[in-house]
Image 1 (tube, rainbow, N blue to C red):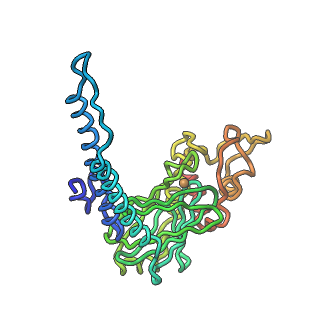
Image 2: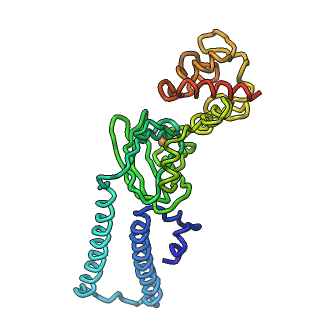
Length: 316
Ligand SMILES: [Cu+2]
């Protein structure tokens, strides 16, 4: 197919084909596209041709009496019927394969929330807004949400699945190419929906094992740890400038004077920032009455909270 020829690497029309499902989904999509193109040419072409050929030429032109044509009627019903059956069977086959993860698949839990994705590995390792998988290995994602409906979508893998609070849904894939691919939320989930981005890193098995054994914060200073947390956790709602996004911008936040909705005032010190991360609704600032923030209680370790506080302190 003309725009898919180069699709292995991705092009203007399609993302790269980076999973076991990509080629079959694209082939079906190509078939649908060509079937629609041919139908469109036949219908619109016929329409224009007949409109010109049988245009009423004089006032006395009479429309011929045509009852019906069995052969034609059979063909224009039967051919589309066959095409639809082919699409159904082909789509069903792909869907069936997508719904059945191999027994030996490597399992990763995915938790969506406003507005980022958490990835939990069985080793206890946890990543946010980014996850790492080995190439050519079946991976099963077991997914849920902490708040509202989200949808987990990896365009390069051609897989998508709703993520629902109070329920597990799953997806599986085998990544066939090493690289870094986009993950999007494709279910409108509130103000920060378009910032609900993540990446999947596909690496070799040996790199994966090394990554899994590694402490993600090894050799990083507290501020650098905080910066990582900011990139994965805070960026959807907080600017690094002083400008308001969904929550307040972080620049100049530390040591600033705050007025709260209950009329009290306070200084944004370490204790205040910590409290705001763990209990966002404990003290609401004037101007942010309707701002929503979910608690990070149990999601960030003490080291990560301390790093975040130290990072915010550097933004003067
Ligand atoms: Cu979402």
